[in-house]
Image (cartoon, rainbow, N blue to C red; front, top):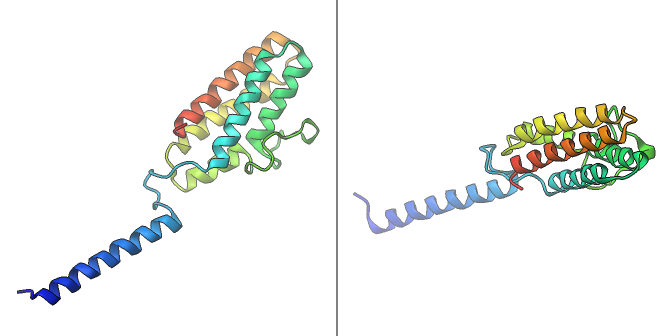
Amino acid sequence: MFNRWSMLALLASAALVIWAGTAAVAQYGGGGYGYEQAPAGLTTQVKTAQAHATNSARSEALRDARWHLSHVVNCLEGPRGKNYDAQAGNPCQGQGNGILPDLDAAVRAYQMGASTALDAARRADELAVETLKSNDLGQVKTGAGRVADLLGQALKALGQ
């Protein structure tokens, strides 16, 4: 049977294990069980892209609508994306590596909602790239509105 000192040693050991585990989770993440939050820069990028998609959908001139939608593509793909247009500018610069690359990394880290958000972001990118080919203001505005909705779905999947 345990005496008082054995019991105290057992409790102290258990406390040490719990403390070490908590410190490891704080430093290295939750081990991929879906409880992590998306990186702040990622949600900021998605919100920025959604704002530009909304601005595109509200634009009164084709040039402005396409300009804002180009910003969306740049935020989605990042500077290494195949449709990235450096001349259009990147309002997401400094917020991350691009929504798609950052979501892809989040999926690999098993972050909660990242897979669903990545699917929505990929659809948003495809639609934005396709919409940019149009010279019809109405079509660009409609496409941009749908892109904004898809980005909203991505935010929702990320818990925003």
